[in-house]
Length: 391
Ligand code: ATP
Ligand code: MG
Image 1 (cartoon, rainbow, N blue to C red):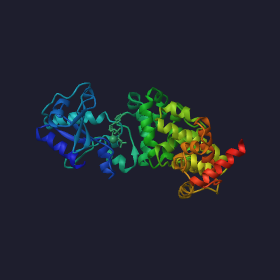
Image 2 (image 1 turned 120 degrees about the vertical axis):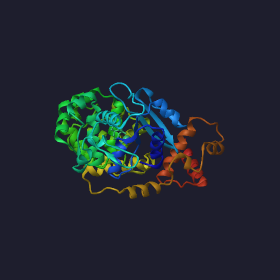
Image 3 (image 1 turned 90 degrees about the horizontal axis):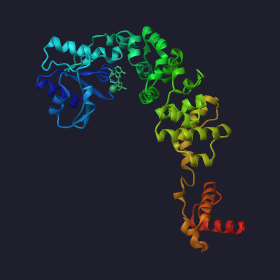
Image 4 (image 1 turned 60 degrees about the horizontal axis):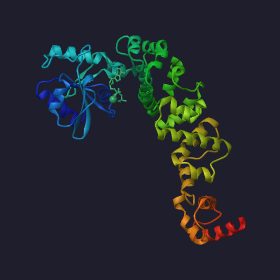
């Protein structure tokens, strides 16, 4: 644990409570990976936690979780729970502590996520999580099928960890996913989406995609490519958005269906819409000046990557070449033009109106395609010539 999080445990222990690191942060510590978030489990109740730390945020006191901000670092502090209620052992003896901690850990999803660690680094491993990690296995705590019936999201979590860690899913756990696959339909799309984001961001998404197909989970997701190979061929992904884009192309889905089915953000939706258009163009020909102008660099790079992987074409551009080509454009947006609507009004001495926008568009096109230099005098010359020609 980080300095601030160890300090949180020290403060809790200092007034007689028990507190340990739990969950993903302990797993990541064992793997010497940087933890994304730090969780502490404690015998202190939420109100007692809030009294001890000046800056806290309530994350639902009914779940027993208080977010403590220690030296700017957010740390989730959760009270040990027994069935339905908080532990009533305020100052537990060590037997009670082990009992409460066990009840906390046994509710967790996988053995590697059910580890705890004391402030001085002593591991508490009640379900042989370290052994499973050494064997690179994801194993449910207890009866896998029961655990997936309790919360079907755990099936997707198991699979996203195959992408993040490159592990396999232990046989009985894997079989339980196959047996309970259709229950994934009960899970809210927000929770599903968050796990899919992590799946796409992992280093072995092709492995996770294979598990999704082989377990039958894929067929029960809101939307997933039927093709069992295509999406895997596009992996790995540089961002989760790229993962969503590849899923769209692999399944030949409209951007709007992808966005609606998974409640993607507006930014993700517009990224997918652009990729969809750019890919159609790219199938016809290499990127044109219009494509370089219209699409952001990340759109172009992802589109080329998809094209390269799916169309097995030799003639593809590297990200560097794409960047260079885009930078070489005479202008990158209308605001780069060295004239504006008021210049046109001044030159023509006619009132502003629809014609301004139309002619700015024509100038933009001429400059972009090198028919006219981006220089006020050259543009004026070109414009007067073209304007009179059209009359
Ligand atoms: P990450 O590194 O991506 O944060 P994580 O394992 O820490 O992975 P979190 O969602 O942060 O995932 O959850 C923290 C811990 O809470 C887990 O390690 C696990 O012990 C427990 N947990 C999370 N979700 C579930 C669930 N659906 N069922 C049971 N336990 C869960
Ligand atoms: Mg976490």
